[in-house]
Length: 287
Image 1 (cartoon, helix red, strand yellow):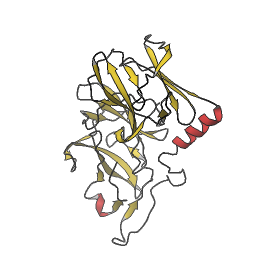
Image 2 (cartoon, one colour):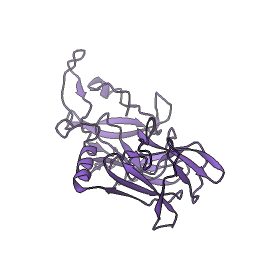
Image 3 (cartoon, rainbow, N blue to C red):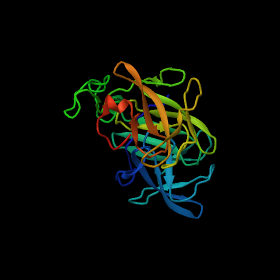
Image 4 (cartoon, helix red, strand yellow):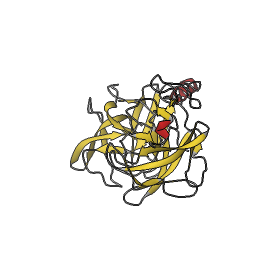
């Protein structure tokens, strides 16, 4: 099981933060590094979600190639004295802003990495804060609250932070496990993986076990139990015209249709026209 924990890194030489809050990967601030592979030089932006291997780069990276990583501020090489126990390539070292060290393999495609905290107290505090999921506390992330908006006395309002009990519309199995919404995802090239999403309304953290480029649509998204496609055969995203994914969520003591866009980076989500007569989603520009 992947947990949605982010790591905030800084250079081991100059101490500058490596976090890029303008270039997002997995909808969170990325880790920006200078990259050199052979004669090619450029930049790479890594996902800061621990366990996610998604990235973006302005140079081509072939699987198996060993890269040289440098700090984008002082341009010192971030090479470790140790080598990867899986493929024997050099490891790359970073410091955690909270205190501690992160190491990852410099070979493209190798998933060897580790986190070392300076002390147990620092580690426990870090993971406790990260599991708050965008500063929503367990008290606020509860079942959908009922609120009567002034413009419509008959509508229920699902507020930001509401926990969306989610189900497959085909087999009716719950898609929630360990407070994560879990689905199968298929890339355009046919590679299959698992998609982990936050089940809290307007909390947009997610990760996948396969690399999906930003703004790339998924070929298919399926139920993890019955393997039935959840992509609606007709509906398209009104924002980017990509396929919409349909799941059921519980509200007003019944199941309603909930849609979100299948294109990575597109944050549109909504309800059916029929359900909008009874339910409102608290205003949001993202999913």
